[in-house]
Image 1 (cartoon, rainbow, N blue to C red):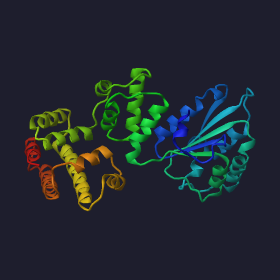
Image 2: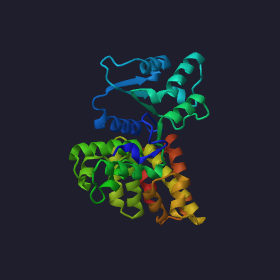
Image 3: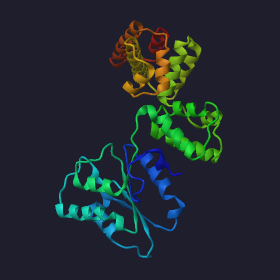
Image 4: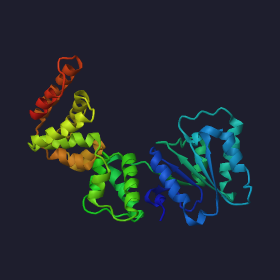
Length: 328
């Protein structure tokens, strides 16, 4: 099973492929998985970057024959003519490309277009032609689907996560897909295709800055001030300034406030996850946090004053930040 099967496809019967979406790392990973299939092992693999070679270069590559009479697998990167921002400068050139795209079905070669764009301009004639002649795989997804997509990739590659290893991976990747995929690949290489244990994640993947701050906040809310102080000192010793840390604390308090306000309005967890496009784990934690709306507003207001004090030189050092955190 190839990874393209995990995503919506327009026409599975078409040989040629268009992979598009905003995440270039995911697109390239899916493309690499696709071309590694045994059926393409004897193909002549060719890469064309339209940004570098231009549309003329793409036309020449598709039009020419293989020197060794091999079937070719042509990877077309940055197909700018699909972008909503593309402006036609040479209409004759574009007509040539349209003719080639309209006759893709008679080619012996296989072409994979990789477009790292959120949208393709489906109003354009050339885009309509391409959609008609290829299998379109859209890889865009919402932030709350990060775990779902990565888990599907791991399952397709027969990689098993034991216990809370997967949850820990997502947390340490701060629910950012590119970071999560990179970390997953790192772990996959470490275990050499075997099971990924929680201790493997913890010993090889560092916590993100946001996750470290989240852990400090959690310790404070649980009145574990010794743990909170230790974690805060670790961040400061790693070179973070009180102003930088305060900005993240303020952002997380604002997030908590948003969740609490929506909860008060009668929204349920899934609705809030969709509205804020956020990590479901963070939403769950926020919904069960003990701070009420009034207290959160006061804490944010004081954080703004403290930030101003640091920036104008009234406050220096981490002591004022620690006092503030202990009084949330």
